[in-house]
Length: 339
Image (cartoon, rainbow, N blue to C red; front, side, top):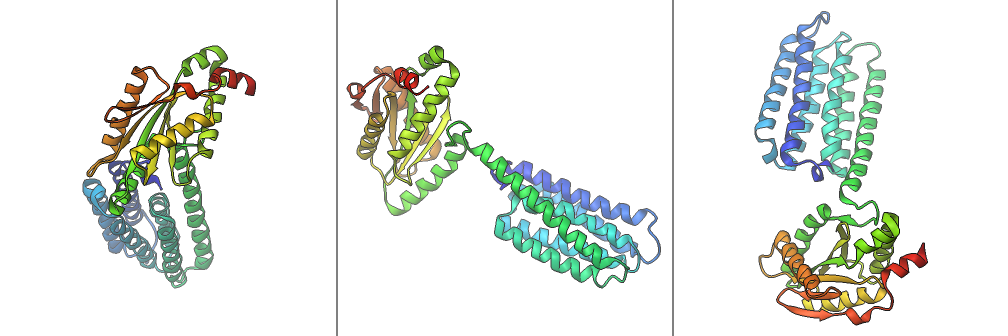
């Protein structure tokens, strides 16, 4: 969902803008010429209510829980049905259905799939109740158009939202998640392992000599190396271990239910599955550890490993695992052979 990309404050501002659009539409529909039979007072009341909600959402929308936001959206759908009913007997009822669009835009962007389905079913039912009883010729056909339009809008936004989510959370070269996506996952794993009483380790891995590969074979050669290393490492990890690319030649590894000693063995295994040497730092979670603090500790240990001569793994707390003699051939030759 877009709430993984939008900060809560920005999402609240977007919702406020959509509510303001709906309110302005109702007010404009009341003051412009529209024909006899429209209950102007009702439209003005609904428009004023929508503008008040827009102001409240801008003020405190980022503090509202997701269920509260969802029920407010359902109330908005019901209000649009009421606006259609207030246009009894005149074609203005058709214009009122346009307000479904901004409400659907927010629902499709910020609610999970199941909630979105409930929202759309509610919209279909309430719009049918309003349009089939409004008494305007062509209202049932309008209902069909409203349903197709809102469902299509919701589907397009949801598809774009999934694509944006993948782009924001995935490294395009290796297909690994990036640091942005890893940090909330690490928080969840910390909570889970703490609840179960299991250890958890994080490793920061930095490829040694990667700049030389780029300088010698160009960035395409460096990219091939990153892809090959990623493929080899993935094959040596458990399904629930999480490997991410932080950027450049740096990787992050989350090892749930793994002690520092076991994590050192995992890093030695990664050193064996590919000839590219690396330096790594391991940090084991302690009670009360946060993802940010754990990553900082592992990063400092990795820096210490590089300072001590590279090709090493350092466990935070100064325990060093030296793997410099485990390499069969330099990474540069491996990239040349595969190119």
